[in-house]
Length: 406
Image (tube, rainbow, N blue to C red; front, side, top):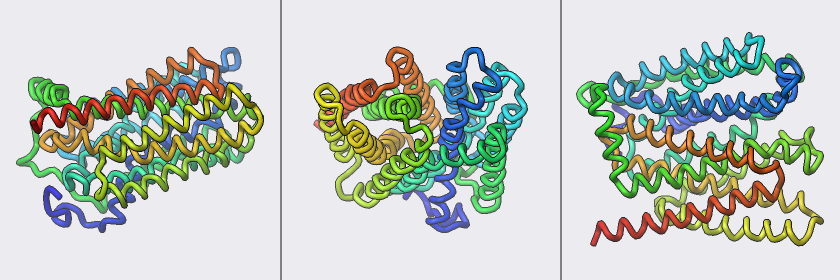
């Protein structure tokens, strides 16, 4: 632990983890709650080109990626709390404008704004955790927060479906607004500033460039960001393809939120397990093991799809369980590895890590979705290739670290 945690926060460890998890979950909730509402939105504001409604997800991610780059330096310069308040204000404005947007074009602009604001809670939460913890303790805290973060994608579609059926799809943006207000009140009343004035870095272009240079020249940080980009690409590809696969390949559109909830619950279990065992086995070993096992599982699934179409849905569900379990054992650990050497520029580090991995992951996932039809084979093949590349990069990280020690 980098400092006395009790000196900068008035809440206990359980509440702290819950609050950080809610901040992490802002992005997941803002994306996944929209999934079951996309057909209704298309019918209302984009009936001529319904496929363009998926841009509601993409434009949010773009806004988030851009916002992530700036929120970190701002929090390093002015403190964590003011930047969180700024982010939530922008997020609320984007939610309101999306709520009342009469056309798809205006909604896309509002979603970019909402994404810009959502970057605030995401970056500030990672920076606060790095302010207070380090090493495997930080990885453990990140795992517990990621457990909730990875559970949200399972619950959010069900919430979105219920709101859409009861009140119409526009009320989903009202739920986003309520989420932001609750987070603002909780954080504002319970969390103290974690970055002392004497530790703040002025927001100067030269310092920002130097901070980025420090991250790019550090082999462990650089490789960790690349692997995290691949894991985010896998998640975004799943988000893009999973609902159409349930609807078109398996004719299970109505039951999709329930299946997806069960699948996402597995990632929560994996994150909880990671928090328990990361201190014993270490972050790098767990990442490498998880990616290696996923390569074997995905390869088996791909071969199965080529040879036997009986029982595909059952195998698909089991395979999805494996993918989400792998995510629970990798994302938090990769973030902790990248953040560990960058404690002196935690806000900027959180920005670069989040911005690069999210935007690049989303762009690659969008490209994959445009090239391939949403089928189990396309999704499984993407995950297989991604995990193979990620595993190779982890081996390269190991060699680089051994070379530095030598």
